[in-house]
Length: 405
Image (cartoon, rainbow, N blue to C red; front, side, top):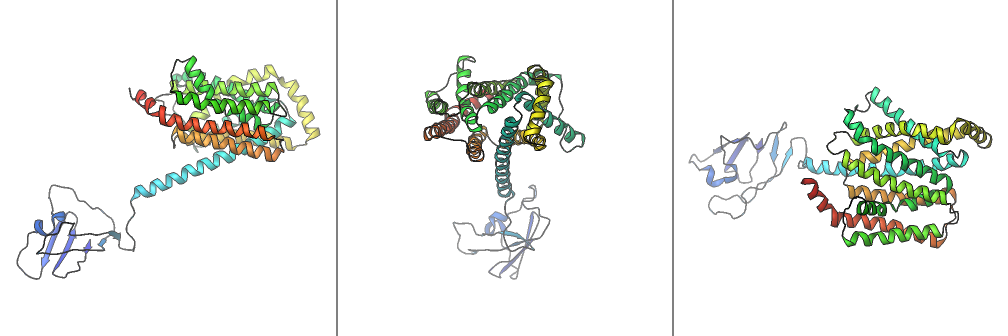
């Protein structure tokens, strides 16, 4: 390292952790008095260890006779082939993390919107939600098996205990997935997602009356706009269908139990979010397939397929493939984002995702919406956002303390 000083009386040369001073005047000056911050200690480790030579760009307030209250030397280091100071790696890593999270969110929302559009187009032409749900899980399972075989993704290390604890999660996930698909086959996409925005209400009610957990009054108050908004949207829905409404409600309840089982059973499991969802999809596929055959069956599927081909043409095959692929991808990205962000950030992102799906589906499918219906949807979504904020303020510190115990 080369150091240049404004006053040319002393020319220091700094090498590693040692400091040597050469003075034109041969009289000795104690280093500890002049440069207290550069006082070498043979037992200490070097402060700087750089592969490139560094220059001290600025030295100020240098005096031998008058002591200074402030630091005698102010300097900035930069590499020899640069003119700017070196940035701390933490700043770059933090900025890169924010960019990464932004990409996750944008990809998550875009994939979810595309999935809902293709899913509704498939269900309009081929109204068999049990088979559609099965194909979605089968496509995702196949994609992950190929990724593991080709080493694109790391194969998870699982055992019997892992699959045992995953089983109730997969049962709840299967019920929620099928119920949501049944709902979309009967009502508009926007209506299904308006009702599904009431999932926090189910979460609190199940935790309170089944698990015996208690919550602050602010949490219960935040449920009022959620329940009220969903009720207002349901009453004013022009194309209301009870099967579609009940499908969305059952989906909410099933996903609440999925989250509860996942939280209790998967603690301490060292499986990434991507592989966790892959295993969940495979187990759900095994559970769903026999029920799909029993409820609908190959005969109904064959008749429906001929009808879809005659009305839509071969494009229906591409629609089915697209909705299956995009279903897996958007869920994959959402689980991967959980490895990078807090539950609150994920909850806010999920709320914004619903808004994008509702708005885009209304525009694409030209869904008729009354002003009162739109008001109910807005109230329900706003209530979900407030719920996530209250959860962070009132409940998250408590839950962290309980987890630490």
